[in-house]
Image 1 (cartoon, rainbow, N blue to C red):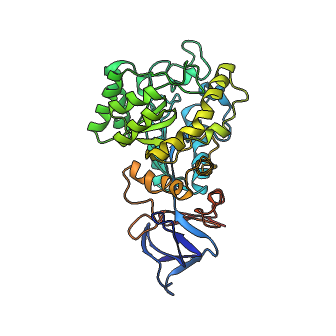
Image 2 (cartoon, rainbow, N blue to C red; image 1 turned 45 degrees about the vertical axis):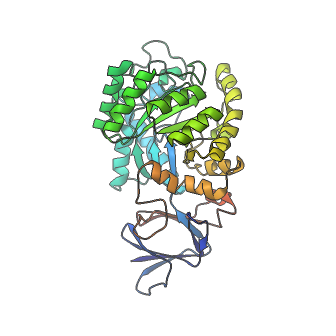
Image 3 (cartoon, rainbow, N blue to C red; image 1 turned 120 degrees about the vertical axis):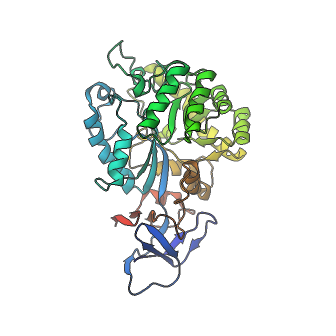
Length: 405
């Protein structure tokens, strides 16, 4: 038996710090919170740290970004093996930053049809490498020329980067059904799709709807019949409304949503992963002028739409869109959400219990008896000062200690 002894434990339901912070762990599971320290236990003394549940990031792309990435040229120079090896470092940095669970939301790179995020997750689960628990989406499903078609990030000429249906390029009802089935067959645990344009691709207006309503309904039907949720890259208010009508479970970004759309999200109980930090942190200094113009329009709206959604009661979970902000700096999203006016405790819930609900995981999100021992330690009360989440000094995942400073 292992006992963690710290200054306190954050109860994410009440916002209270339970003192002293005593957590007993057996194997990968929390068996007691509070109470006496048992002399026969192995004791880990964490001094003045406050313990909180392992954080969760509901939108990352571990197979993109990181050391050795050379921007757009990597799309055509990096083979799948290179991407996986680079992702090992990205996964390690994410875990060491205190994020013990992530959704890898859609490969949009050339892989030959392999689901690299599924393979990465298997390697982490087998303890071959260090990283967070991964909920993989496989390949993002997008129409030809859609925002998540990687040839659109730099307007490649025809045939420069040929992508297949198995790699997510799908048009029409029959193709989108097949693309969803392929991802599920090879291990995807949710489906990521492209519903509207975006900022960093040459796809036209960022709010324009890319898939037809018929195609959207077909994707949702295939996923839901198999018990998987659908997450949708969507910015435009009208596109979000069409996504909701199709039954999509989670809107990624939603920068251009309006009051009508927000009300519809509340009524449908549609999730939102706002990725608001990238509006401050994404480096667009070398981007095409057309992309800079879109960013100038979109980013100010991204700073206000999330607060409007929160105030109305939209269910929100934390997501960064890393590497839009660097891997390992995921906590910057929590800080940004507080800066937008959302109370720190609700932000912490968005990164713990809300995220757990979004991925249907009832075994994590709190420090409580019977849950997974995914626990981090920070130097202070994050309800009073959310920035302490940037300074994670203890990381345990499944009862194993990965960081102890």
